[in-house]
Image 1 (tube, helix red, strand yellow):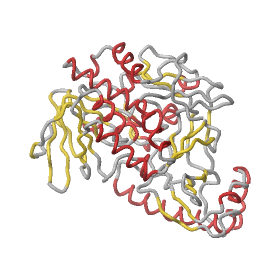
Image 2 (cartoon, one colour):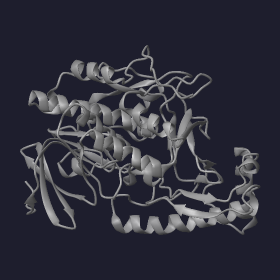
Image 3 (cartoon, rainbow, N blue to C red):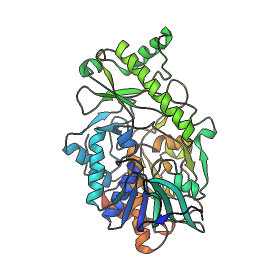
Image 4 (tube, one colour):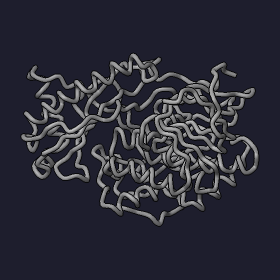
Length: 440
């Protein structure tokens, strides 16, 4: 047990650390099943990367000529709320990776929050995960830090949706650091530009944009580390969001390194805005609106779970008996260099996400969800899409609720019971399932 001293907060049945697409979905799901749920978030709003960095849900649909919806259930409620307020639309992915659902991040903050409050989730904003409490190899609680100092919060089941596997790592789960080898995805600072002539801007093809970037670099007047990336319309008139910067060699788990990444990301973003303004049709009057709330992190700690998803599983469209969701997204590797590496599954196929990837090996009382899950570098580059993070969060929320009901750890619940409840909620676990919700 760690020695940190802290006052105790009222305990909870299920504790979720991190409110990104995985964590928010997990908390809402478990609370809808009648459990006492506390959701801890370091910022003053829900959503994590979904509201602070990006504006599109990828992974709901398979790529290819026929878009098949492969994620459903509680995630549908998020999209439907956005559509009801004309705050989202469906668009083809810039890279051909399947339809994406582009939304207004400010409205999504409200949607996540409204659904959490309606489900009676206890929200703790401005609270930082600090330490873990253990009894043997079982996680029993955490220590949080905030304006009121250190606070201990105990729970029957904890879901680590921190993105960086913070809880799992401190609990002794085995993991590898993405930056320890050469195969680590780069970081990105996203940004939005306003006063864009939308019609004119969209006449420039992706290939033409790449060529303009290449010419700009060759001129010596610009420094664009990535001759790739995307810039796409948003639900707001005249505003485009860009995913262009490339930050290589930074450690997402080191605050000093992250500080330098934030500084460099904003420098690169301003350079790309200058390039757009000077060289791309439609951006003649464009100006920088805002940067992402933080640098976007694709990959940090990769844990070892009871099963580890692999590249062979992904490209072989593998099926698992403990499936808790599906994914048809390609391997999308934002490696060092000026392009992005893609490997696609056979058209229309998907692979299953095994429940065992949510169980850190050797640690009890703990689930992981989102990009914390157990996968190799290549598999992670496919399954980290936000829709799959939501599917994992939904599964973690159900598994935690069953574990509380049965007074067992998540490792010891019956997979069949988990799968039955997920299907009842609208989750899509198998190829022959269909979804009532479709926004194509």
